[in-house]
Length: 265
Image (tube, rainbow, N blue to C red):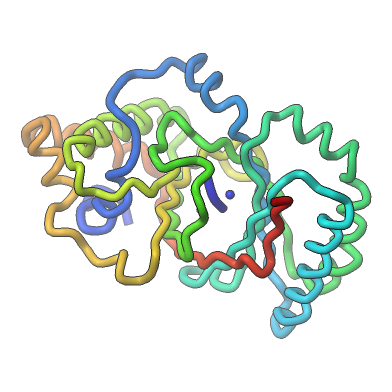
């Protein structure tokens, strides 16, 4: 999934390499955020293949990619595969950069034919398939939305407590404002928010990596950077807001699968 998915009270070593990429500390109203993200809806399929059927499924997926080409599909569908965590081996296929009404037009154009082709080729080999919609939070992300995909991604999934989304986002913005003062940090992260198709509320942070070496901790922790910006008391309060908002947090990594992806370009 790209700009295409523990308690963080400790938040230092891991997320300083991932959270130092996003927005400034300016406040954003719901109306402003909705307008900014109006064309940033993603459709994401999570597929678990029956054990021992991976090679067959991948060949069927390649044939389905050819189906998209034959039908002159104008959308990009990016594929990746989870390589760590409980969902290791799961395939993720996503298309992003759409408005909600775009999905109606696409379904009318080729929805039935696409579903039939996918079911005929890949369906018998699948253990489960989940279809979800996410909004790419452009107002929370700093990396170029249309930049090239990285070989790997580190995914952090935040399942939040009901009613805590605004507090969580406010704390993220406050942290990001502090990290804006750290120009040496890479800007490779994206935030997504689940819109439909799963347990809510859920936020996902995706940090693109060039390889495992990018996972090494940095000299300065996230707490160090926030404390430098606001002082210890305010930094502690900000991190408490984050931890109070969380119901569950987990991480995984994925690798890009360009051989299973489709692009009209």
